[in-house]
Image (tube, rainbow, N blue to C red):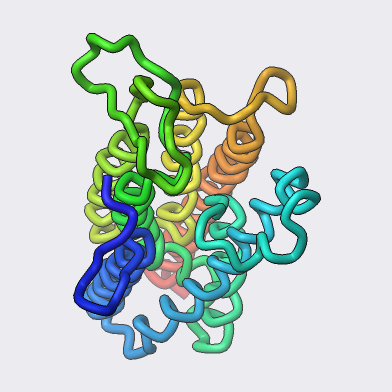
Length: 267
């Protein structure tokens, strides 16, 4: 746990550093996705715009999710270096990609397909920033003799003295890389448009839903945390996209088959 790096007269927040590395990793993977598909659009620029939009959305979502902080700190909470909600960033980031995909004439679903592996890996790298900074995204307290428990006495949101907690950012890091790897492999094979982003929403939603059981977030709806409720919505949208994409692809293939049969018939 290292919230800040001190280099001479400069102090660098490790969360910000890892956020930058996450953006670099995401931009590189998305650029490789564009190259694999022979697309000449500016992938790096798209990631940069989506990142800025995502940061704004993450902060707004966090403020709405924890109104008590806003009541205590006022507008200054918007400029705090801690307090970013993943689903706010996801929502605003997706909106930014949809607009950019439309402007680049790629189609919004195809753009989201291309961005999905990058989003999964970028999220994974960003979670290391949460671990290093000790920003409160860790899990519930563990028994002292459990070897995988960690303490954050000097974190941005410190743990109480003598308390060890589950390092949930590490869990999300590992799962995020696995999801990114799976989506990258699937995107490199023939697939219906919308299938990759649909799988991304399902897998990332499921991962976040499960990890919330061992995080410290309060229950707000039917015994679920805010993030779990959003995860359920993510999985539902993902399942709908996968079903719609598969059905649309099947109908398209059937239409092509009928056209080819018509060409082969005698006049």
